[in-house]
Length: 496
Image 1 (tube, one colour):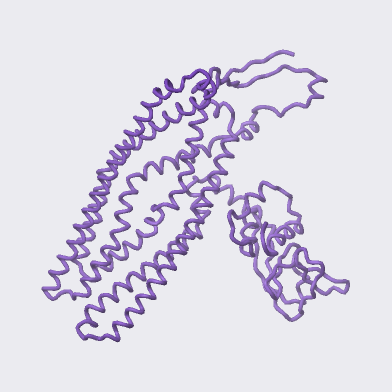
Image 2 (cartoon, rainbow, N blue to C red):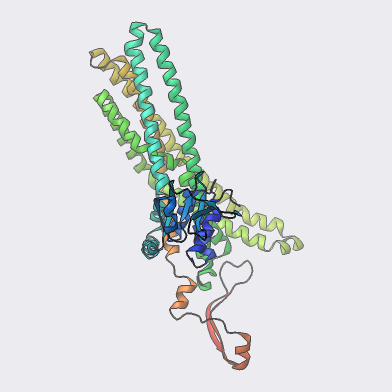
């Protein structure tokens, strides 16, 4: 269900241009979790169907010249379609409305013309996108949202600079002159900056949550559809628990957007800008901040091998535990009837122990890195304060500029420290992306059938009329709860 007239207008526009009905393509083109369905969503859906729209301004007396399927907005902005009365006068009819309304001859109407000739070019572009990796396709798909998030982050950084400048002004000009009226004005301005910054943060959080939900939906649908389209000989050798675990691991890429990694990626360019501002205010403080960034990078490179090894051990322990757990639950009936619960519980205990030990080792390595980063951040702040104080004593820096350098140094180090904690796990994320690309590159059943694979099923009537040999290709037999198939890749021909 969608409120408004844009949704039925989309269906009517497709009907008028003679679009070949394809429910699957239509479903894939619809926006996911759209809060509203307006003209922008209508045009985006048509674009994903391979139909580009072009906005034109047309006087009311010439609306009859619009091609079929053109969506025209009436005086209230509602989508309508043009009809002609017996005398040739243009009429505007809203989808589902019982009567049409005459168009005003001298009024200028905005219309969206569907360029049906653009479908082949868009199809070629879609094929080119399919040839790229999953990460590149997702970046292309959410390019508009990423650009908007980047601009919001830069705007938020500009507010940080204004706040720091205001604090510096208080120490340099307001306090020596004891100008209470100026102090009150600055306080009101800072309050406005805080309110505006909170609005920006709420908008960023809302947009990130929306992108994360859409990302999870796209990954879940595409990966599961790909899994179901693979040949049986590629699916059956792996236990169900392993396949479910792998899909859940793939879907964890949602955390790239909803977690802190996306915020860090958006804040790092701002950190470079703030570092440049600190250099302008105080080259000595900027040198301290730059050295701290380099030390953070060296700390991450040193800790990365150990954390990756601990993460690999945890993944292996979790996989073994999942297989044992799934096999035990598959035979739950026999376990209960025969009273084997305590024995199997003892069998599972070592798997739980190995998983707990691997999790402890990973958490310990990560906490050590976190503690080292916190200590380095405190040293950096102290270094900026001491170098700035030395310059203030020498008369090369004002007290307000020292306060501003301290605030900006703390602000630019926060994304660097978060990025350090996330960068050590970045290879695991890249490995998951490579696994997704490898899975999406596998040939499905349809592709195999197009190259001499299994033939189409034969009807019962045709089978009775001309009995043929029964051919079995790559048969697989797996006993319930078994980790590996008993038979795999068995082919034979049974005569009628």
